[in-house]
Amino acid sequence: MGAVDVANKDLTASLADKKPKVVFVLGGPGSGKGTQCTNIVEHFHYTHLSAGDLLRAEIKSGSQNGTMIQNMIKEGKIVPSEVTIKLLQKAMLESGNDKFLIDGFPRNEENRAAFEAVTKIEPEFVLFFNCPEEEMERRLLSRNQGREDDNIETIRKRFKVFLESSLPVIEYYKAKGKVREIDAAKPIGEVFEVVKVIFTPKAEKLYEVVVLHIFFEVLNTTDRLCNATIDK
Ligand code: UP5
Ligand code: MG
Image 1: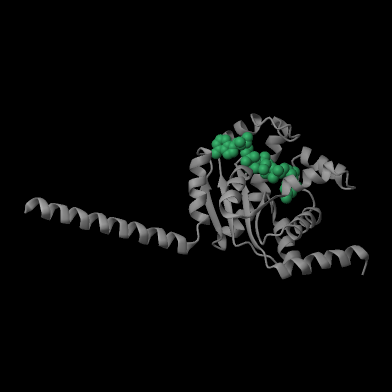
Image 2 (image 1 turned 90 degrees about the vertical axis):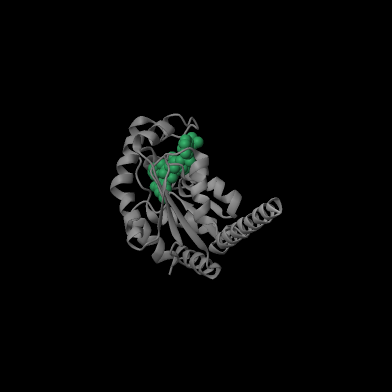
């Protein structure tokens, strides 16, 4: 066994010890994955790992894979699973947290199967931001963050890859009852209201219902007492 294999095995073993909770955040380019992940982190204390951001950081770091990654991103193509999975594993281990939003991954069936096989982690659920292409295109063309893939030619390629390769992953998890689909065409705040309900623990939701019920009971009783006093 080579030194690289040993290092990979160590990564996997240490991650398995952590038993992390993972939510995959999927949706087309510009559907709002990153924007909503930032909100979720603030409210629910997850660690946000954007596979795209990790790959872009890898380019910047001058790693030996940098040029290959850069070329693939420019073409809207999917970077080989082993590269992305290693970056995700490393980021998960380095974080002190055990709750992760994995944004923009898995992007194809091979990504999905490789992640589960290597890490032995199954997502708790999959958040799917569903947004029409015209809206996503409008958002990407007005983003202005200097991303090399935010030009109309690459955007069209990214849409094609999403439809052909990434949607089947969402269908796979749908068949397992794991997909929470959200209408992502709405304004940011409205989308987050729906997201919030999905992340709020059941016990907390029940508590809110009980509190509301008690509140209305008290209101009713007060109303009845007032009416009774007036009648007297
Ligand atoms: N915005 C957001 N929500 C809005 C709303 N509700 N209403 C109005 N505007 C809204 O949002 C995009 C823009 O829209 C922003 O300006 C925002 O303010 C506005 P953002 O939250 O950034 O959308 P997001 O879905 O994150 O878009 P992004 O472009 O990041 O998605 P991609 O999936 O295309 O990009 P990613 O970085 O994940 O991947 C880039 C490339 O890396 C891929 O094409 C691929 O080549 C490579 N890659 C891999 O090979 N493997 C991987 O696993 C991951 C990436
Ligand atoms: Mg993003």
